[in-house]
Image 1 (cartoon, one colour):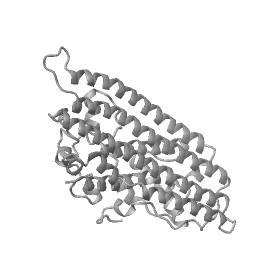
Image 2 (cartoon, one colour):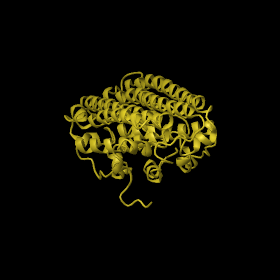
Image 3 (cartoon, helix red, strand yellow):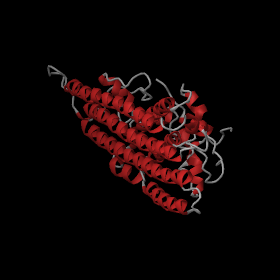
Image 4 (tube, helix red, strand yellow):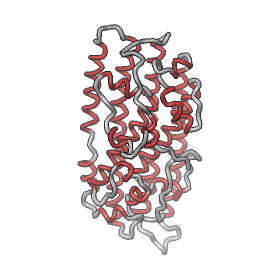
Length: 364
């Protein structure tokens, strides 16, 4: 499976300098705004829908192994029968995800092809020259709207997988358990679970409810962040391209919109909801590979990469999940709007959670 080093990508993305604050240099600025808007709309929708489809599959399979009791005397073991039904849901989910990937590509191509390729790339245009190196790391040389769409699709495909894997560390295992295939480019790794649930079905039901709560609140967190940041960036980008000489009136309105967007993101807390869903369970049971396998997030360096060396309690897990989702969300935003840091600086903002997105010893 292909792994995209999200933290490394974030470290490699330098904060760009504005060509000249608010200066408009592209020949058809309305085409640049159309392209940027298409990117924001398409990528936000893709992330939301893919997370939903991943959860449809894994939730079904997880319930089979955690909440269904085995019956050695039955002609067909109830767990196996349940997993066969889950396979149908997982195959459908894989089909929907593939279709959403195609929609994402088509929306970007349609929205950005009218713009001259050099203005798609230039730092005073949409700005993809700023992440050209990162696209090369994904095997794509960005030259036009088609290659741009391929780069964005590859990054988003893997980033969403990594978001979901932190929510449900057994997701890759569960897809494999039912025999569903997300394709060779999937980053939904099998972290080595045992292919079965805990022995106590009552406990298994609690773990399944906990996991359902985690994916629900984390999915909402991601969607809220991407929609809020997208709306803010779209407003500022429009000002830069279409209202550069209005005496700052447009930017003032955009700043107000961004204030509201950031307030939404800041209120979007994970810890209280996770405590409600999982707080009644001994966290050691959630760490078990036959439980939720949260220990894998430590063993695989997911949480340590974001400054959380261990997750002995729900609050520790919530902190890890929050930071990881913030940082991968930032990477998604930067591939969607390469000028994000510059645009946010115009309204006195930076991407939320940026402090934890680069390891302290990272060398620039």
